Image 1 (cartoon, rainbow, N blue to C red):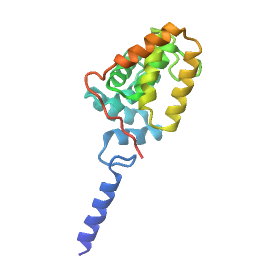
Image 2: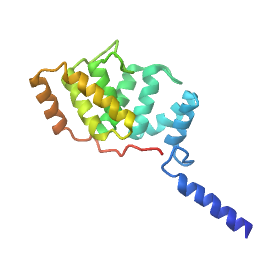
Image 3: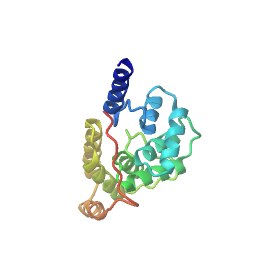
Image 4: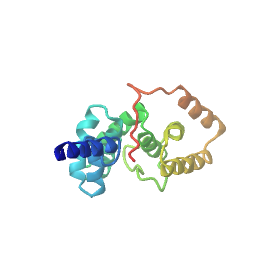
Length: 182
């Protein structure tokens, strides 16, 4: 009887933690926990494998580690590729990262200093796309501020081109479903 009750308790914990920060079966979530504890190399190990297999959340996160050289050797070209893969699949944080790299906002985490793509229209496209996928309040606020800033610097023709690019955009190679860890 006790074994049965213990098994039910374990099953309940596992079922209620699925899709959450504490999910014991999700390598991505385990990477987030390692990252939050400052163990970037352990997070990188988990995210690299997932990123290389097309996990859009892991692509963004692993790109972040590569960009900043956290737990891995800094490699901005590889980071950009992972950001691009995540953004093209529809991952909002990846889209913001590309917007930041193209626009180089002063308060951006990803201020670009080398091999930059500075293109205000491309940046606008990525911010517009991120606006639709932003989930958390901090993401929504950041994108709203970025859009207000970039619109104040754009011509009407640039805005129209960026809006057309965002309208014509489709996920590639396939759409991802970004996680929303609770």
